[in-house]
Length: 361
Image 1: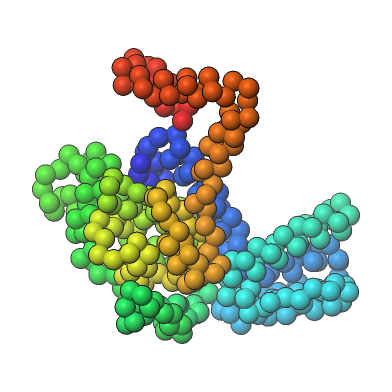
Image 2: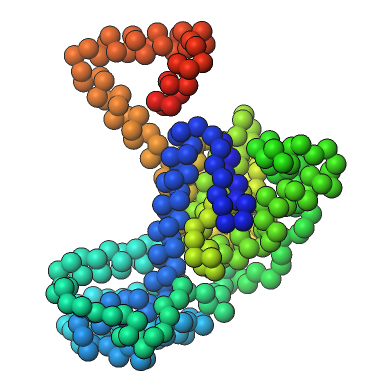
């Protein structure tokens, strides 16, 4: 299975389960897009104006924020609206301004419940109410300090070093990474058909994106992102990044890197890769992998970023439910015997029947 971006198009190749995972990741990235949009606080302010007319002066709301000061101003106005309407709710302004995934999601949930209980169904023109201003996603000109990882303590002692700003760029030499090139050639016929190395690199760069990887780094360091680690073959791991493109207004899934040589634990390899690209681990919102034995990796990522949500157990829910259902049936033994027989004779079945059975998986 491969998910590669060509411009604004997400191309998926693989079986039904892989496509389902791609759709799930797409939904998660869409949720992150909503979180990016509301981070500035202006949307909450207008929602309060809708539900409690006159509780907030929208002329003072910054619908286009330039920095964290503008966002703080919006949340202060929201806080004042809460006090004015006797709403007993504390806002964690610092966390909301920093884009904390959990805190933002909790506030969204609270507003959903509040809206359902208080909206009177009256007409409301949001554009007119805010004087024709455009509600834009949060793209601060002065990004907050990015988390960097210090490996000076060695593999057993990964420590966090906050308040270091990223100034370097990922070197262009990464375009010649053999692992990435091999992966791209394997799944892209236009690249695999070429034999000239310079042409291969040029076409691979088109597949990865002309601004790869700087555009991925920029988006991931400004907003929450998702990471999907696909176990390719026996030893390789493909790292995909999902994020909301604020400029294009759409969610994207991009190939970041391919890990083909395990010099240390899988946790250290993943973290080293993020460090190489200078991507902030603090913005990692969700993680999924189909690789086995992920206990250490998941616990390690959560130790470095407690807000990260692991989705690794999702794919097994349907399988576990099906197995439990079969076990509870009176004909459980006969059904399991039939399944074993199908597996045993699968190689000798006609191609059309194999395809039918694969689609059922």
